[in-house]
Image 1 (spheres, rainbow, N blue to C red):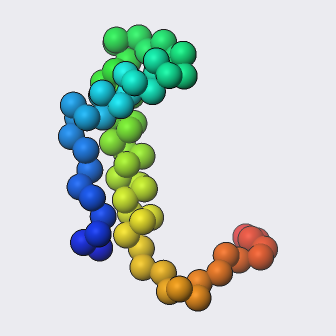
Image 2 (cartoon, rainbow, N blue to C red):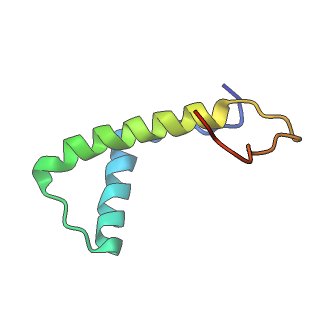
Length: 68
């Protein structure tokens, strides 16, 4: 993993972000859901970290067509 990626935030920081984002967006978060939302945030942060750690050359271009 590249050294320039910051460490993942701890649970307290993620919960503080959850609280602030919920207020700013006007979304009520049931206290019973906080643990599940935190688990989801950890999973998304881990997935984003995996994507960001993948090395790409400067010349990399997106594919013009995606087909299976």
